[in-house]
Image (cartoon, rainbow, N blue to C red):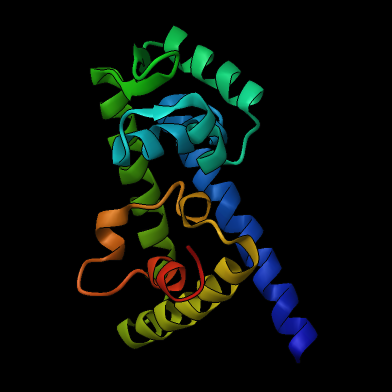
Length: 171
């Protein structure tokens, strides 16, 4: 039974990832990393390119290329920060794109879980919280885990399981 459950989880995780990526591409025409970058910047404006890369799982050079691409699309802009450091911020179009990404993601995922009763949805939320806590223990990076999260919905009437795991186990 354990192997079957793990296999079903893997298939579901991959399918959900594909659905989220497809929604992001349809909504903005950007890659999954770029979509995550827009959402991350919307939640934490003024990050350096290096920090943005860390939060979306890219090297500094890959993050710089991604920011170049987003800048060409007029979704982000670089701003002088401290010393030689450059901060990345969203343009008006970038803010709209980030909001659109979160809306598209939310609609798609909400539609998916409608097959479950309210009680099953609550049970699933509890189970997913446990899994995210366990994943945090391996990954140790809440920003990376939550790079495409709608943070406001996660903490609406509840505690974010990743944030709690970071307080409990991380730094």
